Length: 156
Image (cartoon, rainbow, N blue to C red; front, top):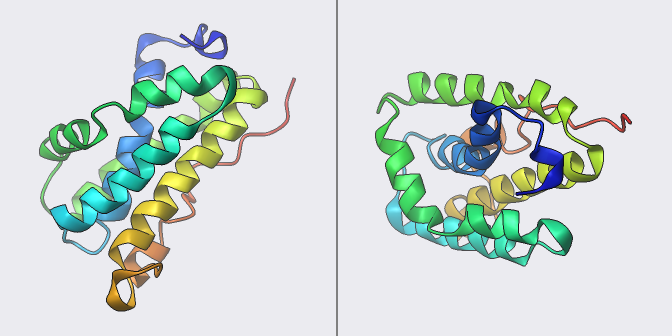
């Protein structure tokens, strides 16, 4: 495991690993419809991004990317079908990342946050817009920049 995560509790570590899936659920479900074909494209892009992660953290990101779509399907079943309720639950869960990210060395926390933003953008771009290419839907635009997760600071 990544040394920067060694001081986290089991629940905090689980949240860090689960967050890219939560981001996928938040963005893909923003318009009320999670289209499996569109979601597959977005998840493929997100998985590709996670697997490309360089440096000492690549194993961590690759473990998240492994079976991303299967993990997503399982996660989806744990949340309400009602869009408003689901979005509210996911946002509250993602907000819990803020104190966790403050505990983590910024050399890990900042790229991790950027990774979440990239996953969000890739999924949003895969399912919205004219001819479904590179356009974020109005519903997704509310969440695509993950306003519930503060950018990790440069604390020491």
